[in-house]
Length: 433
Image 1 (tube, rainbow, N blue to C red):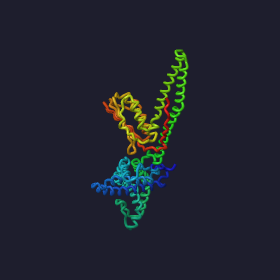
Image 2 (tube, one colour):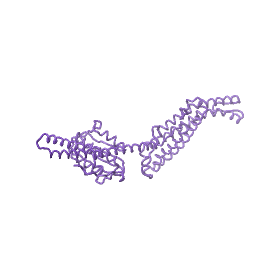
Image 3 (tube, helix red, strand yellow):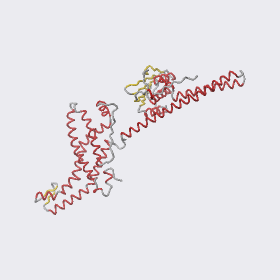
Image 4 (spheres, one colour):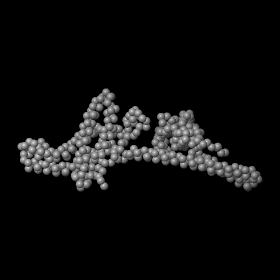
């Protein structure tokens, strides 16, 4: 297998005869050149930044230099160096600047620019002078002697006066050029590894791969929600309707049975048991996917969840004009509130709670707050860990602020846009008695 980096090439027997020593020399030579230019540019921009004029340019010089450095890496590292920056969600220079300033990669690249200008560039030049400059100066001894005619002072230290001495010096330079190709490539490999670690770590996935992972995750979430809705629909239209029919048949049979007899007693027990099963099935269906959520949206579903809570819940801060959101978002938000209110009733000792919900700036924000004892810990098995994972799949966050003594605030934030009419299934069913 062909080597992909300078370090891998060092293990090859034919390394001195290949292209890798030339690649390493070119990488260090261009590094010294870029380092010098970067030092000059940073000094100029630093002077202008004293008047706040060059401050943005000073910061953004890092990404520009990093893009050049990722291209230079191809000299000694054949693996593609991906760009770690994200694409702004909205067009425009302001959005681009806000995104870049907030990214860790931008600050790493700025730090690398300072390091290149102050340390790496001079080191590149020093390594190049020691591993290439010295052997080349020795190789040039015969040329220097011929040009002078009498003597040649090699590397300003060794005086050569005869051609045999000049030839011996040139042979020594050739041997050193081959021998020093190894440390030259090692230095270039170390430089490239440092540049990659700071500017394009190997674990950073390519933008296309990231996009595919996000799309695949979105498809899985949609498929999961579709399957939940299918199960809810099948139970509602199938098993529940049959239980309703069975309950009605048992009720009619009770009317026809002689009162007070053993048959009437057994039918009454069967009728009561069927009613209990029907009630439990309705609760199960509501837990899988509440019909009020599918038919009327998140605001109505949150109000319904508050009405079912064991603790009084104020819903005045729920925006009645919440738009219809993607089904996966509505479902995750609804069950987060359900779980939070269940925890309030079971663990908090609260007298009242509050639910707030609104959609603004492309983000759904929901707060559930109670006046309980606080000190809520998701690690104690309250179900919040699973909810946090489910919300994280939607690129959302679940935050819990619960100091000892309370109050406890659970906040859900999910980035999303209003759903199109075709993506929201609204097919109200007639409630069964």
